[in-house]
Image (cartoon, rainbow, N blue to C red):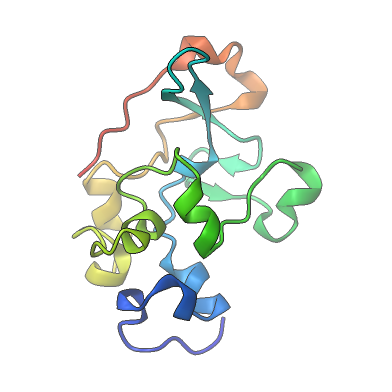
Length: 147
């Protein structure tokens, strides 16, 4: 993956190398869930319906490197884009760092283990369903309130 600087997650997003940027992701899977937007209010409502490439048991993309070939509207987050998209969860490491906030206490870069994220309820692994079997999104509204 390349060398990662000590405590790189405390740097500004624009200062991160590509490997550091990728390592900053907590792997919660929430950005890979479908969202609905209220046409009248603009409110974003989350669902528990995952992109067809998300492994619903692990919350990891099955083909991250080639995902755009299979899901053309999949976004590749950048420091600029993180500041523009309204649907990133408040717990997202990218969003938190863009807002000048520290990583959550459960983040694997702070704890050394992804188990803390699962224990905190921040990961969608085992709590979501694939879009290939879900049916109408309106039947799958979810509240992913996490610390």
